[in-house]
Every structure is written in structure tokens, then in C-alpha cells.
Length: 259
Image (cartoon, rainbow, N blue to C red; front, side, top):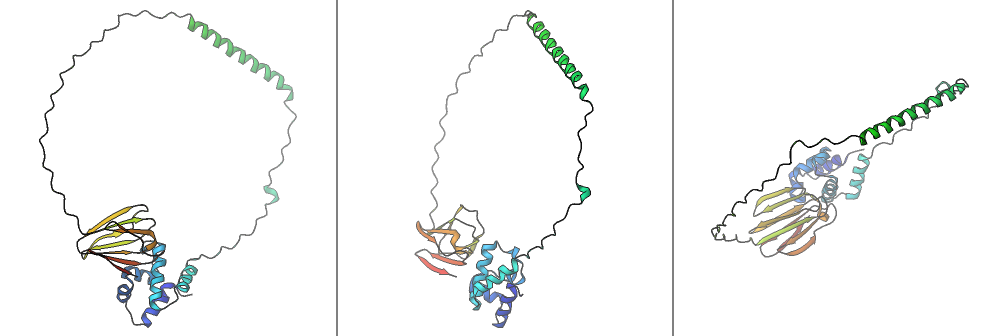
């Protein structure tokens, strides 16, 4: 059975397209496209992003994304192990029956008398130790207790007023402020004013803030796992589970999304 990477690579080559062409059209990095075609799934940030990238890649090539994902699941499903034949225990492995002996019954009475005598000896010794403890008299003190000398408190220092500092002027806020709150794992890349300022997978529950003067592009690999706020206005979730989306912001408005 062909792998997912072989299906996508064959269809891409039929359409005379390069990996860079796919990267430009789908916003999926060429590194991840090459890893999918080579079957090196550990290069990708996680299975949620892997499925989203496969779905977008297949859709752009005109393939049925669900059928391609089914091929991926078939490739990943392990073969069922063959059941082992039950082993029959050998007759010689059964533990032998041990018959209780009847010998030694006559010595039971002697053993009980020995135990009784030992217990009585312990009780007598304990009583003697208690009586000896109470008959002891405490030794007299050889020297009177020393009187405690109270130290003379030092005078409290006179507080010196600190010099007044002139507060520095606060830096002017940039016209684009985007806040991202993560509700699930979501690969994210942020470009502010043409310069990449962040790329990674934040922790679930983490909140990040980015600023820009002219433009900002937020590129995500699992649109359902991130909620955006632009200049104090909630944008909500910008896509579905596993969708790869880029959202652009300017100083005046939001330009839209690209998938």
C-alpha cells in the first residue's frame, strides 16, 4: 500500500509543482512538506498539525482529503498480534501434597510451660525497674541559676527622606496590539512589520502579546486552539480543528484570513 507521502509527491509531480510552490500556496513550511512526503512525522510539531497539513495539502492538489487521511491511519495502524497457544501445565509441576505429621504432639505442653515462665520473669524484672526508678532522689544543684542580663536597647535611627525621582515618560503604545490565548496546542508564527518575532508551540492556558507599528501576520497550525484579541476587540477562534490559517492585522483593521 502506498504511503501518504508517496501519494502527495506523485500527484504534485504530475502537476509539475515544486515543494516551494506548495509552501507558497498553502502557507505550510517547506520543511514540513518535505517531512510528510518522506514519512518523517517526528519533524512536525504534533499529530494535530500533521493531520491539518495533510488535509490542506491534499485539498490543494485536488485530492479527497478524507481518503488521504484514511490512508495515513491505515499506515499507522499496527498489525494485530497472533494469540499465543495456551500452555498445559505438566503433571510433574503440580506441588506435592504434604501430609501433616503426627509427631511432636507430646511436646506441646512442655513448650507452653516454658513460655509462661519467660513471661513471668519479664514481668518481675519490669516491676523491679519501676520501683528502683521511684526510689531515686534527684541530685542537688551545685550552682545557683544565672540571672539574665537585659541588653540596653540601641536608639532608633532617624529616617532620612529619599530623594524624589522624576518619573520617566512611558513609551508610546504601538497602534497594533494582538493578544493570543491558547486553549489547545497550536503551532504559531508571528511576523511584525516584516520581521519574524515568534515561532513555537505555547503551553495550554498561556497568553502571549505582540505589538507592531504597520502590519502583523499571525500564522497558526491549529486554528481551533487559539483565541485572538485585536486592539481590545475579541476575535474569537479563527478556524476549525487542525486548520492552518494566517490572519493579518493593520493599524486600522483586520485584512482577513488565508488558508
